Length: 132
Image (tube, one colour):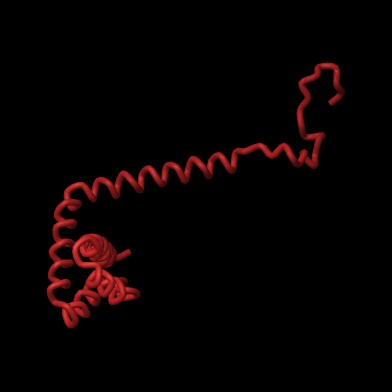
């Protein structure tokens, strides 16, 4: 397991996600101030946002002012979430793992009453008068 590569891949994914969030923010702003530009950006962005850096490069070729705006917004978002993100991720995984383990334990310990045991002779009786 190459932890450094995992960290780099995670950072790239997070960067692309924050680019997507910045795009959503800018689209909302443009929807209120410049609907035709919002429609253009929406159409331009369709199917291109998977790789945040490639998206920004393409946007720079078309509308540099929008590329700069999205970069500024994503940087602001990153600064705002960077401090508490590591703890939230750790806590989220711990809680999710605990819930998954709880559900698994419930599944494997659930007594199935719809199918009686195929070997009734192996069941013990609580009746003292019964033959064993």
